[in-house]
Length: 244
Image (tube, rainbow, N blue to C red; front, side):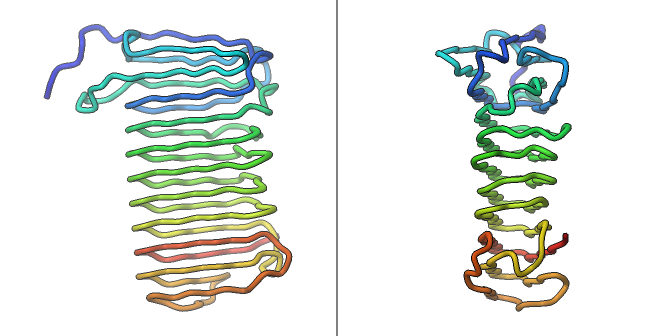
């Protein structure tokens, strides 16, 4: 294995919250990307630990901030740790996050962005109490994705190889797809308040504990005016629970 450059560095990038409408992160490799929400902070703070400033760049255009980390060396033992602190007043922010390899943890007090787009090539994606007022997209190539306690009009979740988990409420449409892995969904509301379209290739479909078929199984309830729930598992089980 090629050795890393000597002398890792740490730094903090501050950005006035009042000037921010969108935040984009493009990080080719990280040890972990952590998001926190602060009621007292008045600026966005992006902290890098154990990284290299030569690989770090920032670009600001109008109300958009872009932060990039491009090492070009995915075979290093591990990447830096990034911690992003978002002030509560940034709840109309658009978040656009792309990580090549590494884990993302977005677990905090309840926070609602305008739009959320998160893509991970290889790694785990864990989101808790993060919502979007317009729409959200979460994608993981290889690794598990867990989106918990969120509220969305529209949300799309995809795991190529890994399990996909969702809990929360959806007012318009929920799409969850796992190529190889299980799909587990817990929805706020009654079963009749959703229109289900469920498909499992090599696996079983269960809705509120009742089997709806196994192996090349499909289950549809038809449109009833409620939110659409479209779940697909290529190789894996689908489990859905609804609760008030």
